[in-house]
Each structure stands twice: as C-alpha cells, then as structure tokens.
Image 1 (cartoon, rainbow, N blue to C red):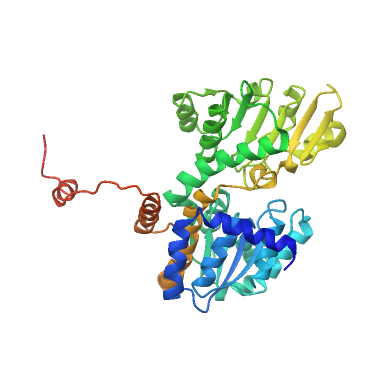
Image 2: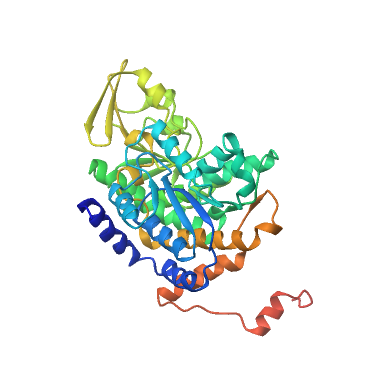
Length: 412
C-alpha cells in the first residue's frame, strides 16, 4: 500500500469516530443486506465522510462506484484509500471539465440501479445522454438544494424518468448539514486560504437560506459585521429579525471586505458589482456550482490576473486599478480550500443517503416518476439515533397528550 492510500485510510478512520449513526446503520446493514445485488453509482465529494458512506452501502450488499461531484473537492488520499479497498473510484483533485464528465460516464458505465448525487449530474447525464440506463434505474437520491431544484424542474416538465428521493429535504439534513456544516466549513476554507482576521471585517452574505443562515451566524461569532443580501422578502425580514443588516447587493458592494455567495443561482456577483468593490475585496462561493460569481465578466474587466497564493487569484481591474481576490476559482470554498463539513454533521446527511437507498430498494415498484421526501419516521429515527449517541434524552408525549393533540372537542 502506498503512503497516499495509507494516510487516507487513517483519515477515514478518524472521520468514523464522529459518525456513530452511520456506524449503527452499517452494523444493521451487515446483518440484513437490504442492498444485496444492487449497483450504486455515487457522484459525491470524495472525502473521508463519503468513504464511510461507501463502506456502509457495501455492508448492505451493494457494489459501489464513485466519481467526484466537484473538480476541486476530491481528497486524493481518500480516493487512493478507497481504491485499495476495492471500490471503483474515478476522481482526482483539480481534474478539468473534460475529465470530470469522463469520470461521470465511467460511473454510469457500471449501469447503477441507484444513483447518489450531489448536484444531480448523474441524473442529468442519464436524461440527456444515457436514457438507455433509465429502465434499469430504481431512482436517484439527491443531497443538495441545487440538485433537488434540478430534479423538481424535471418532474414539473414531465420529463423525470424515475422516482427520486430529495435527501436534502429531510430535516436531519438541511437543518444541520446546510446550517452548521456549511457555516463552519465555509469559515474554515476562507481562513485556510487567506488567514485574514475576521473580527471587525464587513462580510456580505448573498443568500439567507439554511446555508446563508449558518454562514452569517458563524462569521458574526468571530466578530464580523455581517450584511445579508436576499431576493426573498420573507428571508430578508428574517435576517433583519436575526440582527443582521440587510441591503441590496449593489449597495453592499462598496462596503464589503469579504463576499460569500450561497444562493444556488447564476451571476449573483456580476460585472457591475465587481466595479463597485473596494480594492482588496475577497470573493468566495459556497454554493454547489461555480456559476454564482461571474468570473468571465471579471476577466474582461481585468488587465492582469495572477495567483498570489494557492487557491487565491488576484484580478486587477483596468479602469480603477482595484484588485479583487477570488478564492478557489469560484468553486465550493469549503471543500476546495478545506475538508468540507465536519464528520459529525455528515453523520446525519449520509445516514439519510444510506436509508434513502434502502427505502428506494424496498418501495420503488409502487413509486411514480416524481420527487419524494423520505418518510418523517425515517427522519425522526435518524434524530433519535443521533441523540442516543450523544447521550441525550428527550421527553415523549403521554397517551393523554397524544389523544388531546389528535382531538378537536376540547376548547377553552
């Protein structure tokens, strides 16, 4: 075994220390084999936590093939470790666009019965190029907001070829992974890339969904003055009530020292916004795709582009001479510049993935081509398992209380 793989195995083992829920599921899967005979194709960030998920799926009887869901998020030592364990792995950090899609094709060539996506790229490829695989596909499981949006768009257009599970819609996923995971890992990635002092900095957070909430919370915790930019009036109002300053991005552009996008939409930071930024402004993205920061527009505005340190590109604007610093090519800063979400939060996210695969295997024959949310009892089961591993008890309703909540007769 080479040193790269050896180091990866040690890191995978370390992550496992903080994933007791997935460990319990793996133990049950080893006995029951609910995925026996199934091929599962995964397009996920190739990290230590994903390696723990792969081991769980294999324990359930599945054959697993894995490719990366982002060109910069692969941890090469983990990819090497997975290969030594017999998994089919098609990923390396820094792969170009051509190689990225070649690896997706390689996973699809295993003819998976279930796909696991982080951004719906496998599903998209099946619908656009590999419709021959649709008949043998039980369905996909999707763990990102971006991917779920794509699946729901397919379903709304009447083009979805099979039932799909929106893992991201489980409360034990989006309320924890998106908020606490994205919040901490985004901060981690930006600090590793720049080592800037957050205290006193004006941080502009674009988007106040669950990810934006987490990012804003964490940066305020380190003493930043956080400004929130939103297009949804309810979320904008919520940010105000949470104590953040809210204003249009065009207004915030001249104020911000650090800009973070977490919207899932395109060209959030456009040419007009770049023109208004102060010299030395730092721009990072924690949304899934690298489309939130309009880098093509920034290149056209610039007279010089250079790498000032790893994963930090400096764009010197033609007219003003101001320098804009962009982290990790506008890709996921938490995975490109750091290690992604903490294992303790991915424990719940990947528990949802594993149980989604089991649910699809058991129920696919009675499902129609639409987007499903995991049943609430599975969501609550994951929460109970997590609380148990933390040694935390919680109250339960008495029979009398249950009857009361289910009745209508009792009044004032």
